[in-house]
Every structure is written in structure tokens, then in C-alpha cells.
Amino acid sequence: MVSSNTALALSTLCLLVFISGRLARKYVFIPRFTILAELKYLGVVRSQGRIPGTAVICGGSIAGLLAAAVCADNFESVLIVEPDACTNDERGIELPVTIERRTGSHGAPAPISDRKRVMQWFCTHILHPVSYMALQRLFPNDLNTELQYFQVKPAVAQWKAAPSWEPYRECSDRNDITSGAPLSIPLSRAGYETLLRRLVKKSRPNVEFSAGTVIAVRDAKDALQSNTLDRVVVRNPSILTLDGGNLNEVQARLVIDATGPAQAGFTKWLKAAGYDANHVTMPHLRDEYKPTTQVVNAIYTVPSHLHAQIPVPGGFKPGMVFIFNPDPSLRDKRGIWSQITEGNQLLVGMGGPGMTRRPHSASEFVTTLLDHADFKHGRMPPWILDLCRFLEEHEAECEPFWTDLTYPSYHWVKYQEAPYGTLPRNFAVVGDASMRLNPLAAQGCTKAMYDVVALNSCLNSVPSGATQLPEDFSIKFFQTQALRIEHMW
Image (cartoon, rainbow, N blue to C red; front, side, top):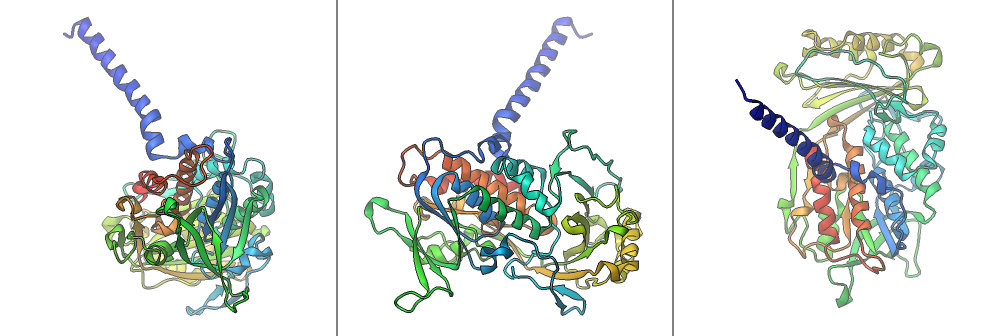
């Protein structure tokens, strides 16, 4: 028998292990690998005064807008340079009442968008609860007010994911948003970007928006500012200078590459400015894989008189997200998803590596679904088929349009591995410009939030009274960023 002393020692040891684990989780792992511990610092203006000068954000999509909000709390002024001129007028802060359409190459109705540079504009979009928590910190006074424009409210994250390692089970709905359950915002990709632009314009008066394309960055000529960018060169076709050109140089205290998959910093700017961390001198910094993912998305606008009839779990309520991940053992790589967002929109989609045939009507979706290996093996919930047949019956009323996308490659530029001195001290990269994730993982916007939280932490550490960023600022940012986003890759 075990003596009482031995039992006491074992109990004490177990208690110490438990306490040590809890402490390590709270004080080591959560701060090091997540953004949870740093959310409380978002939306807080520097108590020691803003850093003098302008932070220039090169790109005004989701990551650029989030970066602008953070920089506005830390710099005297912020300039967002975005090539799509539509983002600077009412089209940037309003959703269209109707979507213009054309006949796509697939023969079905396809949308026409002013945001031609954003390929996922009409795609399924998921905002993870941690992003909603961060938005509450960034825009505490305006978030709920601006959501009224979209006629949506924060909703329990009712995500019904069917993992490949077990049969599908319905999740119980938790509709009480006061229950402590994780919350999200039921907005489309277009809705989320529009929300962010409205929030930044309303809450950050020191942010300026400009139409144009950053084509180059310039290194400071002052020897006291070594490894420092001090200007960006902007091309704006609508502006003609005295010498007949359309280029304008803007002074910059911090330059942020938010150019998306173009990765302009890595592929163009840094090499031209004389820095070795670029695609020619250090191609190994870019990690890449090419699964060639084919995706089709459809958006149905469901009239109110059909809401009570539509066969989705919990009824037709914004916030419902369904994601079905295929069983790899069945060798059918097509995932399936559905989402309800603002404007009575129901999004359905399908995609995966090498998917050559894509449906472009509800009837074709039914046929494709019946042919899916997981459906044949009973691993898919039956209401998905019921939903597709419902949409087939009411297709004329719901007036859907279809979007085909092909993602040829995904990449991560590992700036954190660049040797000291090969990067400017005042350069940061956010969003797809640093890491472009597989959209089937639904983490892109969350990753952008991780980027800007890391940026905010590094800016908060800049000493009081500093007139320029520390020599190790960029490397510190990229190392902090890499710790948070590596698990996504």
C-alpha cells in the first residue's frame, strides 16, 4: 500500500504541476503566441504623445485599414494610399443597393465590382471571435453604432464545422449573446471592409485617404538616419504636377506594406532602395506552396417571406456559418460552406485543390453534392441537400450571382529571418503582403488582426520623446509577428 507520506507527496506534486501549467499558460504561452493579453492596449492613444511625422499605409483594404487605426493612435498623422479610387468616395463607405451583373465566362450571372483588385470581394467571409474582441477595443464608441448601418448585431459564433475525423453532429445553438459564448459579426467580405473604413473615418480624424499607387520608397540620405526610409513615391493619374508628371513624394516616418498578394515591398521597393531583403537577393525568405485551389461562391438574396421556410439550422439568422471539411481518406478534396450575412444574403460555396468542374446554378450544386464522396458515405448533414433544393426551387426569386476564383499559390515572406541591416528600421508588412493563407482555412482577416496587434505592441514600446523609430524596430516587429502567425501557416 502507498504510505500516507507518499500519497501526500504525489498530491503535492500534482498540485504544483497544475499550478505551474496554469501560470505558464497565463504568463508565457498566451502572451507569446496569442494576442489575447495585448487586446487591452488597442485603441489607447500614446500617453507620452504621438510620434511626430506620418505613417504611410500602402494599401487600403482590411489589413491597411486596421493598421491605420493602430498608427493613428501612435503617430501625429496617417496616410492611406489605395489604388482603387472608389474607396475615397461614397462607394467606400456604402454598400450598393443592387449589384450590377454581367454574364460570366461560365454562362451564369456574375457580379461587377468597383473593387477589382480584391478578388475575394464577393466571397464567404468569417470573422473569428478574437477579431471581434479586438474591434471592440479599437472602436469602443462607434462599433455598435456603425453596425446599425448594416442592420446586423453581434451574434453568437454559430459555426457548424464537420471535422473529417468524426461523423457530423449538429451543434446546439446558443442564441443568448449575454451567455459568455464567443461572438462574431455576421458581415460579408465587402461588408467588413466597408465597416472598417467607416469606423476609421469616424474615429481617427488624423487619418487621410489618397487615391494612388506607391511605386517606390526612398532611403534617407542623412547619415544619422541609417537604414531609414523617409519618403514614398506615389503615382496618381488624376494629379498632374508642374513638370507634367503624375508622381508625388510623401514624407514618411513609418512605411507599411499592405499591398496584398502583390508584395510590393519584397518584389519591388526594397531592392530599388538598396536593401538586400528582397526577392532577388534573398529569394529563400519567401516560403511558398502551390495547391491551385479552385473555388466557386454564390450569393442568394433571400426575400423576407422565405425566411421561415429556408432549411438551415436555427432558422434564417445572420451569423450562421457552416463549414464542411472533407474526409481526406475518401480522396474528395472539395470543401463546402454556407453563411448568412447582412442584406438577407445567403452565401454558398464549394472549393478545393484541382476542382475542375464548378457548379453555377442550384441544380448543378445539387448534382455536385450528390456526387460528393462524403455525402455518399453519410458524413454530410442532410439539410445541406435540402437547402440546395430549396434554392433551386426559389432561384428566380433569390436572383443569385456566381464568382469563380483560382488561388494559384500561398506564400509567407519570412522577414524575421533577414539578417540585421538588410531591412529599413521603419518598415512593416501586414495582411497578405506578408502571408497569404489558404482561404479554405478561413483565417485571413484574423491573421491581419494578429499583425496589427503586434504592430501596436511594438509602437507602444517606442521610448517617450523619440523622433524616429529605434534601429531594431522592424526586426522586433517581424519577430513578434512571426511568433503569433506561424501556427496559421
